[in-house]
Structures are given as structure tokens and as C-alpha cells.
Length: 295
Length: 310
Image (cartoon, rainbow over all chains, first blue to last red; front, side):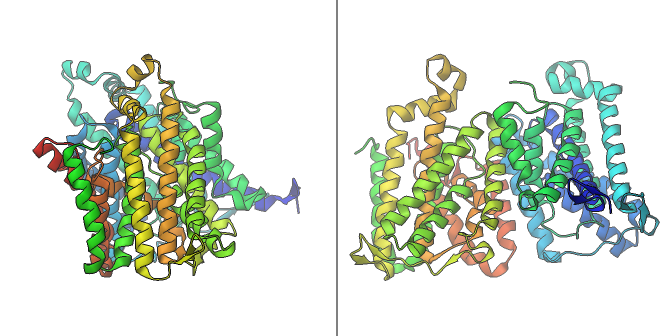
């Protein structure tokens, strides 16, 4: 068997792949957080809860309506995104003039309500969601076996991240969005409906998290707590990358996933804490974050 | 008295009277729980209410205080007052480390960093041997105060908790109304201006962060003696959320608010305990209601209506 640094190659590459898969989720989640933060100036604590809602919506579509994975991948983000739009209109939009902290507190409350309600109705044990049959099985890559579904998650997440980046950086909608992030009143005076844009931005960020949730459903068991612990790690990712840059959050997300995967091989006890350790190091060396602008 | 306004003096003596009379009516263990959490909430409020620093990781200090007090009391046989002090000292040291890191960033980032560091601390607590992992530290003896007075009876323990609570409460009040506290408020209102007046704002923030963490550690330590147990629940994230809720409900930036908030939240938990996850839902709803319509909290609202400081 091939050995690398005294580690069997299949183990190393297997953990590396797991790391990239986790990184894909970090990237999707921190991307959504960054977009929302840029436009609304709030940190969406409910991001983990909507991630979980995405997975539950996919499960619900399958079990109540017989709608399978592929449609769920499209429908669940739309449904949860619409829910996000309602939340923004009802609650978050009332807070823009206040201290940022209130946005964090409010979305924290929303997360508690959403997670508590789901736990009440479905318990905390977790529900199974099967891998769609087109993606079952694995490919032999010569140096390791790659489960098809994991490969799909990485590709899908990378494509969605890339498309989001292109939309924001290269299209006229994206240009307006970036302009409104810089100076909302000025953009509004050009006749662009900024409040609508803000609402839709929140919906889009939430939809990204829900998309990640659907992708995650067949890998992790669908349970009410799947987002709660995840979001704290994503916050660390965001602190490391800085929320100022879209591309930065994508790169940081994937990069930290890989770091976490490698840690699991070489020092398993540290795998739960390694991202936080990286955060501490980054705070000491570059307080504004890897891609952040100094305030 | 001690920089109390007249309204505050009245409220303070009402509180002391309530603490003295209450064990005759209510279950002392419940009251001790309220006081421990009230102290925890006061410590948290010292940061968010008077310096504008929103820490989302205060469970780390509370929980480490609980672990250290429980460990020193059980494994090393330390007397309760030393064990509680050890809890406070370790809470303060941890606060020094967290604060030193987190103060590099402001606002939202400060909140996220404290949250992430506390989560790291939680993971470490699941792995360290001395914490007892999932079991926690159980059967912590209350011991004898100064090696003389047994605290096994609830009333004796109650007296200790009450004295520590009132002492720390007065200390916090003293901090807030000292020249040091005035600078803190200046930082809250306008940090660049405080800097331009020549204050090293980061040093001030760090000192108050350590004080807050140490008091949270003391609160956690007392809690572990009262219940004889320190577990992962004490260091875990929901605990940080609860203390935020207490300060928010009672009124951030008021001296009595966190006490009322703690009483409300703990009472609610007691009554809703049989309904499982509905506790979480109710807490979430209260969060939303408070942020949307009731940002001043109970005491803040009373103070604003009557135009007094409480």
C-alpha cells in the first residue's frame, strides 16, 4: 500500500476529500453570510437554522409530496428563501437604524424559535435521507475510492459559489448591489429600489444556506441541531476570511475544510478545535482577517 | 450610599429585604440558582451595558468557574471560599486570554470571536480529563466555610450565596460609578472620541473584560457548590445565550435589570421544564419580542417612564 508521511494513502486522501466536502459547506455558508452582511449590515445568526430548514424541506418534499432529490435541490432553496424574505420584511427590516448587535440578537432569537419548533415536531434523533440513485456508488480513482455523492457535493458547491461570484462581480445587478453596499442613499437616488434589493439579498443568502442544507441532507442525518453547532464554526471561518470579500469567503471556506481534514489524519484530537486555533493565529497576525480590509 | 441615587438606594434595600425574606416563602435552592445566575447576568451586563461589548461566549467563564470550584473542592478538598475564589481566578485568567484576542476586533466581529473561542473551550472541556467528560464533576461537597461552618444545610449555603451575591453586586456598581466606569461609558458612547482624549481604550476594555469574566467565574463556582455538580451544559453555547436573554429582558445598562431578568428567565425555565423544547421556543420568542418592541427591558422601561436611574 502506498504510504505518505507514514500514513496510508487511501486514509489520507479519504480524509482530505471529507475535508473538501466540509469546506464546500463552509464556503456556501460563509458566502451567504458575507452577502447578507455586506447589504444588510447584520450577522445572520439564523443562518444555521435555515441550513437545517433546507435539509428538512428536502426531507418533507420527499416524504409528504414524493418530490425527489433533484427537484428538492431547486425547490427547497426557493421555499426557504421565500421564508427568509418574510422574516426580513416582518422583523429584520425594522432594525436597520439600530446598533448591529440587535440584528445579531434578533436572528439568534429566530434561530431558537425555528430550531425549537422543528425539535418539537420531529425530535432530535435525526431522520434518514437517501442518496439519489444516480449518485450512489463510488469511483475508483486508482489511489482512493471516491463516493460519487461526495464528488457531486464538491462540484455543485463550487459551481454555485462561482456563479454567485460572477453574478456579483460581472453583471449589472451585481454592480448595483455592490454600489448599494457602498452607498445606499446615493444608489436609491438613481431610482433603484434599494429596500427591495435588500430584501431579495437576504432571501438569496438564506437560499444559499438552504441549498447547502439539501446537499448536506444525505451525508449528515437530518436533525434539528445540524445547523446550531455548524454555524459557530462558520463564524470562525468568517472571522478568518473577513466578510469584505466574496472570493475571500469561498477560498477560506474550502481552505479551512482541507486544513480540518488534514488535522483529522495527523492529530485527530485537534480536529474539532483546529479552525478556532487558526482563527486565533489569524487574529494575532492579521486582525482584519485574511481578505478583510482594515477598518 | 456608595454613589447610589435615592431610587437606587430604595431598590437596593428592597432587594436585600427580598433576599432575606424569600427563603421563608420559596425553595432556597431555587433562590440560590436565581442569585447565581443574577450575578452571572450582572457580570455580562457590565460589558454589554456599560462598555457596549457584546460577548457571546460568557458561558466559558461561568462554566470554567464551575469546573474549577468543583474540582478544587472535590479532588483537593479546598474550603468553599477558596474553591469559589479559584473559580473566579481561572475565569478571570481565561477572560484575560479571550479579551486579549477579541479586543483586536470590534462590534459584530467581537461577538463572533468570543463565541468561537468559547466553543473551542467547550470542545477542550469534552476532552480534558479533569472535567469528567460527559459525566461532568458530580457529588461536589459544599464543605465547611473557613474550615469551620458546615454548608450542608441549604440555609447556611443560602447565606453564603447571598453575601457573595450582594458583595459582587456592590462591586459592579462601584466599578460602574468610579472614574474608571466613566471612561467605560465614554468608550460605549463614542470610542474614537475617548481615544482622542488620550485614553488607551483597549486597555480599559481588557480590564473590564477580565473583571466581568472573573465575576462570571465566581457565579459559576457558587452554582457548582449549590447543586454539587459541574457539567458541559455550564460551558456550552446555550448558556451564553441564556445570560444574554437575562440581561436583555431585565434591561441592559441598568444595574438592577440583570437581577430581574435572571429571576424571570429561571422562573420561566422552572415552569416550562416539563414541556421540553418549548423552553427554547419561548426563549426565542422573548428574544424577538424584546429586540422588536422592548429594547429597554423591564427595569429600563420603569426607569425611563419614571425618569430615574436604576
